[in-house]
Length: 234
Image 1 (cartoon, rainbow, N blue to C red):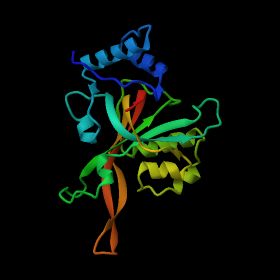
Image 2 (tube, rainbow, N blue to C red):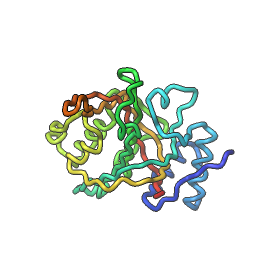
Image 3 (cartoon, helix red, strand yellow):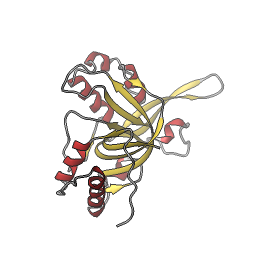
Image 4 (cartoon, rainbow, N blue to C red):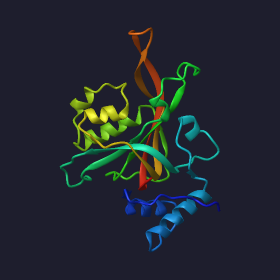
């Protein structure tokens, strides 16, 4: 088996999630967390469920001989925290958002109309509704919309506030508008399981033309929900 790099967990570690994934994969956890992580990595490699590539498009993710459900990526990501009042929810509730690298640059003029430019990666730390490990779904709406509905259902944000959002803005802008507290972007290394990827997550950008004149340009991306097992700083 090839050597695998797993991040240290000085930022976040979910032991319960690790143990649940091992159980659902038909494996037995070890007494130490390190050996349990090594076992998970061994199993997902043997089952061809593992990748170190950053998600880029739905086609890359879901159309192939094997779907890599588990990923170990180094990402530039922003931590977003929401205050919660219910004892049944993590407090604070934390998600991480990693923008696709192309978002920081003007749209490549060589791309065809409607071409996808990458994938937002949205990581939910401690989710209050565990997902089974054997499912990695495509959803027709954006994954951000799914997450916002989860936050509404948990009374973290209101339906009214979500309706006021500009739907064509990037995820971090929408989460900030809903009261999320954004930390500075940082590099993290994260081992996570993918659970959902969208068919489209459009972002509207302002494109400068002819000096002072500008126009709005629709750019196409995917977005993905992942559940981290551990996160380490880089």
